[in-house]
Amino acid sequence: MSSYGIVILNILTFGIFIYLIAPYTTYFFFNDVKCWKYLSYFHKFYFNSLAYIRAMLRKEGFFVISHLPLSSPPMESPDLKYIRISKKWSYPGNSCGTCSNCCYLANCCFLDTVQNKCVSYGSIFWRYFNCGRFPTSKKQLEYYKCVKYEALE
Image (tube, rainbow, N blue to C red; front, side, top):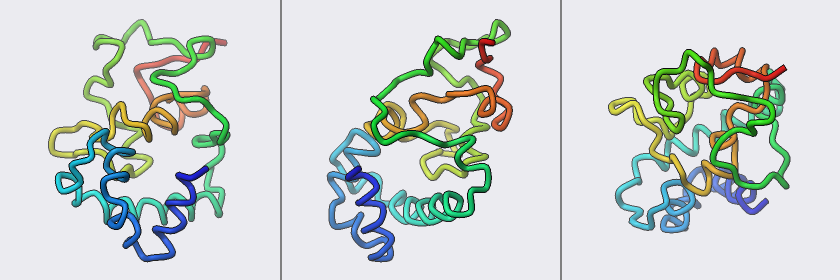
């Protein structure tokens, strides 16, 4: 719940609050307290937060693809009772290969488009929110056109 409070405070201060708590911010999002290495992501996070809240308020399919109860435990992979890795997947199971559909469609501010990798991978944020548990449903797979996983019927 405190994560949502930080997002709200950051929005109310027009993005300044995240700079005031920079070591915490970079630890939460990047598993690193060396905040100077990640300052370029701070303004991206502010605008991404605004877009996220706008989508949530407008309900632009938001809850179909992003709903996550606040009491959910951290996860490093999807629940294999509902999802499995596709037999066609030719990359390691802990890799997204060359795919970043969900990052682009969600307009994620933590996607390094130069190296095509997630700079937040494995962080507290990544494990507690949608990334670490993606995908959670067949609807998510269809929406993001995910080729790595398939839903179990």
